[in-house]
Image (cartoon, rainbow, N blue to C red; front, side):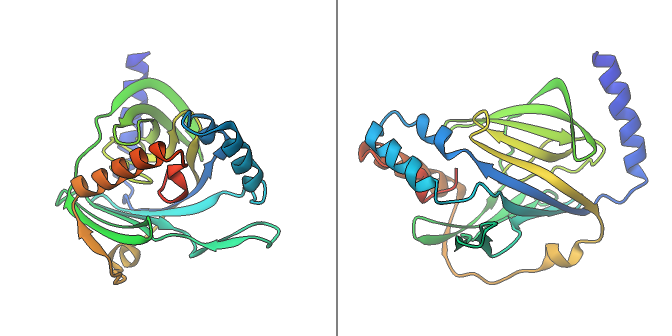
Length: 248
């Protein structure tokens, strides 16, 4: 099995060399709110029932995200400024979420709106510790390999599926660092799933160099992690759902 995988990806790698590695990926991001709430043992049954009833007012329509990438950089953000339900009855402005990675310089520059504020996080890259597994899956026409890691702050199991025929280190959300573009992320066994639905190999230099000026509080990764950790702990003590105001 291992020899077959090595042969497969060697062949894919040869084909990829002839193609310039840059383009755009459109992802569908979905969350199973009922499943997420079921994990929150600190919530009362009454709270969970009220949250379920509230969630019924919203469509299960995915949020669309886009990733622009080349061999050296990536930019991941909302596809649209507003989310709107299919029936047009519900809409809201998507919180700012702009994730930039410079793999050549090993730096990050993120804009994350949460907890009523906008944070600007500029720091060095910290690559997740991935474990690559011998499992394959077809995603959007690309044979992808499975990898696992974990989010120690949110206590989430993270599964990624990456395509070695697109040998760039980029990925959705804040994940990267695999020998191929991440086409799917699964957080906590389906609590939230980000899946590529369209991949376009094209010039994206304009999108990667665009720099919209956004005001916010400048912090480092350690500061961001502490804010998230403290918010989750405070919410648990108050018996509140922490993910109404931060990204799952």
